[in-house]
Image (cartoon, rainbow, N blue to C red):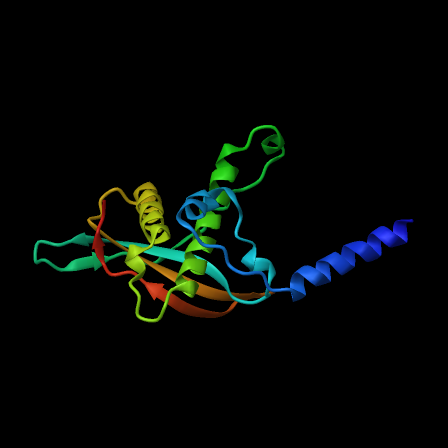
Length: 171
């Protein structure tokens, strides 16, 4: 009897990998997608999205003095006490899910379309402002970059920049 369940599981798994389902789009479904994880990272092993940001201060001469790029990786450290109450880690997972959705939105954008019109772009702007304020309270401008990173056992093997935002005034 157990063999039947195991075989059924693998048949169902292979079926879901082979059959391509249509992408469902709609305004109400788009607003509800924050509650559902982006499962696209299970479809292929390879490059994963990483969000980087940097801040700048405007000098008296009008030039911008940029800080170094900072990796925004919202995942948190896990502890045994988090089995009972874990809002901080849940927030980090939701923010990483937002980065994954942003990558998917950029990937699905038609050629030449402006990504600044995406809802996920605006959400990433706010996340960037929030994280940069935690690190440095005195910035006037910010910029973020979505990089696709290929990780290996010894660290990053390759990184490709998918999108760099224009330098914008911080909110």
